[in-house]
Length: 291
Image 1 (cartoon, one colour):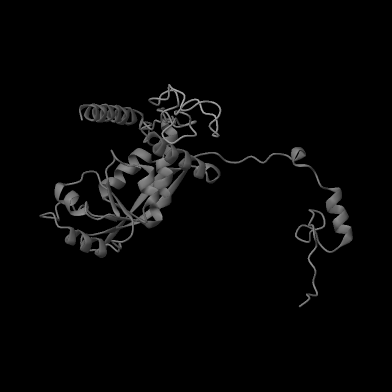
Image 2 (tube, helix red, strand yellow):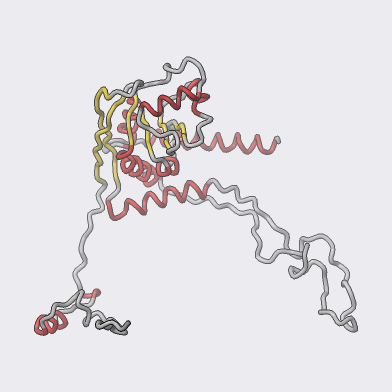
């Protein structure tokens, strides 16, 4: 079946009806006033850090709304917010790599000092060693070697990435009154019932950010695979962005506003956190070496 309308084989910038009107006079005017990109005056973009104010509902342990609270955090400009958060999460994931992958080259593989068979009169391809990468059990060409994958990110940039991620996740965030003492004994079934009362599907990925995690809460929630229980010490970008629901407590909201708010300056706190991380890393290395 033949179609009455034919599509042009090539579509140029000036002949396209997307950019130009049907009038020939307007076409010539547009072409004559066209200026290269290099000659256009550059437009200035605002790179100032803004404040993102979000209103969050406060729920009781039974799931009833008892009030509202505000989350006022620093937020990167829209033009750079995506890049800042991306750089922060890439830094976190890359710094977790141990860099212990190692393969043997043909110089490190055991054996291969003797020529496998004579050079001629065998009908086979000439071969000088069994350690060649062409043979099973031989060396590896351009294989991985132990290396340091860690990269650096500025302290203020990392803090801005976290505050921007939390501000963007505030749309799916709720605040629940302190529930640490509500669980008298570890019971996963009771914790799942509490999630349903708060409007959270246990099958959805949820992240809890609390100042302290009581033992009964930790034991009740550890068998739920879709749930992450974080503290200010373990707060990270991946769990924030990977969650469908973000659950906070009033104490956590105050902490976020004081640390990541507009008028906050957590320089001394950052130094303390870095010292704790270094001590934790050293302790982990000592444990691995002891094992």
